[in-house]
Length: 176
Image (cartoon, rainbow, N blue to C red; front, side):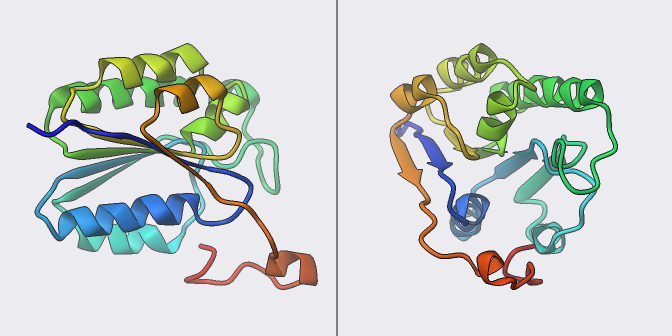
């Protein structure tokens, strides 16, 4: 059995979730099973929700967020964000230990740690106790150095130029 990797996509640039979803698409082409657990992202509708349904049953999506914390239209108390993020850790542990998946993607988990919604040690425990053959992908900005130390591959997305700064709004199919 091959050793599974711990892969991190982080940084202030665009493309972290997109890179993880690209990996999922590639894995489906090899008849692999993928579970994507989304922290933070919640009630907003974005294109990958529709496209991931087309990849069922190979891809399972679990949404465990109340939406982006403290920005735009967030009306949820911080306690609600913390509660569902902690539930996300519990679900992640169950999925990881189930041995039903080849890849598990913890989308925006680094951001949830950075915001203090979940504990760094809980994420490190997920990494350290994962089955050896499982590939575990963690996305989100502000990854902690302890996670980098445990990872096999870390890629940082760095913003060089972004259309938002020129007044161009988020585009369907590009940004959501």
